[in-house]
Amino acid sequence: MNGLHAEISLHRGEFALDAAIDVQPGEVLAVLGPNGAGKSTLLGALAGDLRPQRGAVRLDGTDWLDVERGVELVTHRRRVGLLAQRALLFPHLSVLDNVAFGPRAAGVRKASARTTARRWLSEVEAAELADRRPGALSGGQAQRVALARALAAEPRLLLLDEPLAALDVDAAPAVRGLLHRVLREQATPTVLVTHDVLDAVVLADRLVVLQGGRIVEQGPTRQVLSRPQDPFTARIAGLNLVTGTATPDGVRSGDVLVTGREAEPVGERERAAAVFAPSAVAVHPEPPRGSPRNAIPVRLTGLEPRGDVVRVRGAAGEAALAADVTPGAVADLGFGPGDRVWFVIKATEVAIHPVSGGSSGA
Ligand SMILES: Nc1ncnc2c1ncn2[C@@H]1O[C@H](COP(=O)(O)OP(=O)(O)OP(=O)(O)O)[C@@H](O)[C@H]1O
Image 1: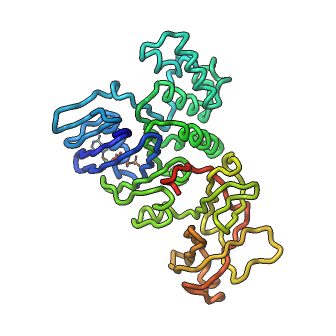
Image 2: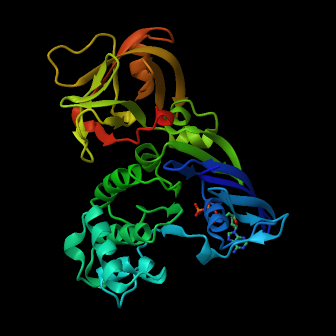
Image 3: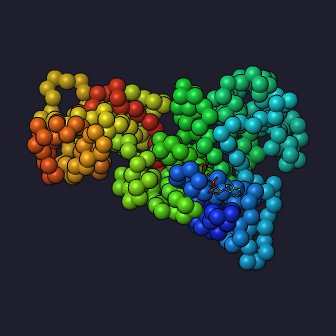
């Protein structure tokens, strides 16, 4: 079988990771979970830095690990490309030679390795940085170079460990957009560990949620996030998502059109998601007249108290949406499950992102 297949059982003191994952060629699997859930342990076992007590890791039909049969391929022979929080570039090498490092280490001659490096640098929109030293790069530039370095080594498995977590809020969207584009073109199976549900939405085809070393939820990203079964997933999935096709006016999903601002560049007719917080949604019995705001017709599915507010849940076509309103507003409007109302959101509160478009992500 092509792609990654891993079954891992690994104890670290009191902690035990027991998880099985499959990632197809070209697929991005996001791993989410609270602190201490075992996400880094899982990556460590895939990379060969940690040795499971039981289990197997197989890539494109080659055994990297089979504890029962005594097979264990050492880390540097696994051809794993890692993009971590920090770029960890070699400080004494130019950007070009950092990216050429992988091909050089694989025995490619210098001129040819540099040609490959230049191609990857332009792929990550960093060609003009080739002669710089890593010390002269911004965080976002360094991550672009680190991505080029990882890909230039032609990895068979890509591991992304919180690749945007150390970037400031201005740099993260551009690097996220770049990852979205570059990963879509890769045939390499990819595992992405992240705390940010937006990374999973934009970058991942499928999602697993780890809790206490076990997978408590898994499936296509937007399906899991729109119908979370586990309380942790429900908490992180707090954002509203309307997934559809990008048009010049916004994201269209069936009869629903949501306008907003592009958080990352989105091409027309590309798959895209309109993302907004429940706190940005007002609930109206009628569509507001003459208003430039988004008004989405919704059938109410439930009301839940949440601290100072009431979370009003509704369905708009395929999308499950939520609004946080005051208890007073709920009492005034007097609505309940089954009623038809309008969710109203200012376009400035809606961020539009490109999303991974595999059929599994629909
Ligand atoms: N070197 C170690 N020795 C023993 N136990 C460890 C070691 N490193 C981590 N652990 C334990 O393994 C468990 C899983 O840790 P891991 O780092 O995989 O979680 P994580 O999901 O990546 O968390 P975070 O989101 O905080 O990075 C934790 O309970 C942790 O205390």
